[in-house]
Amino acid sequence: MDWQPLDPRAKILFYLQAFSRLFWLGVPVSVFGTVALASIGPNWVAYTFGIATPFLLLLLTLWMPALAHSRWAYALREDDLMIRRGVFVRHMTAIPRCRVQHVDIKQGPIEQWLNLSRVRIHTASGLRGDGVIPGLNPEHSEYLRDQLLGSSHDD
Image (tube, rainbow, N blue to C red; front, top):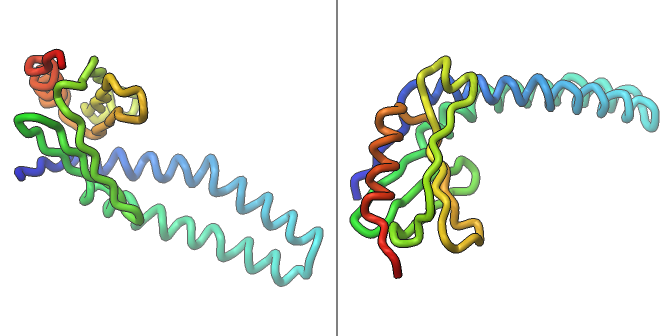
């Protein structure tokens, strides 16, 4: 199987998303957890939590995006589209071409800035049979969309 990796610029996208999650989720959880622990238990537990949690979250933020980027891949085969992803839990999704209903190409603000797009495949099943491939070159996204829709046929 000929696995296609994501665009190299997608690694920057993954890092920006990870630092955004760290700022908007990690910092408030660390502060709230520290204050909550200080009010119900010994101060040394709260201080340990307050120092260790941001440090561990920062380490994960520095490590996970590169690993996640290296594990994302897809393969467009004659009968289906295979999507491989996952860091801790590996996922492999097969989307039969004959079940593809429509394909969306989206670009958020950061993706526009990096000239990247994501492809979302909607299937006929409606049971989480959808697939998403982030971090693609827009021209390649359009090619993938055309290939998926051009070969789809009724059951």
